[in-house]
Image (cartoon, rainbow, N blue to C red; front, side, top):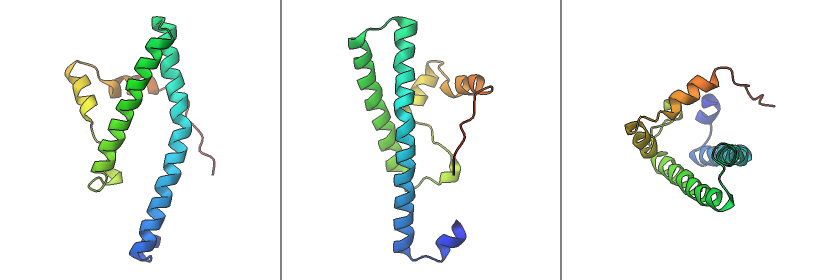
Length: 119
């Protein structure tokens, strides 16, 4: 891809990067709702939460996700994609409380079904 981009004008490169970004956002949004449903279902199933509490936590979760997206967007100019994801303030707060979501994800994710990406 870099070889192709090197032959493009700056304007063409900007347009292509914008289109790729839009396509990525479309793909992510498809899976966001499934993640949200699993999150709320777990709260209902495990803790017996009702509609009002679920809606309250979901609104807070939505706000937190927007906050992370704003953080990433603001940092995007200086963030090389190959660097991976940067730590967020929320993750740091959780880590100070002994909550390591990345570790849990790694432990639980080993036997996880891999999603097939169709071309």
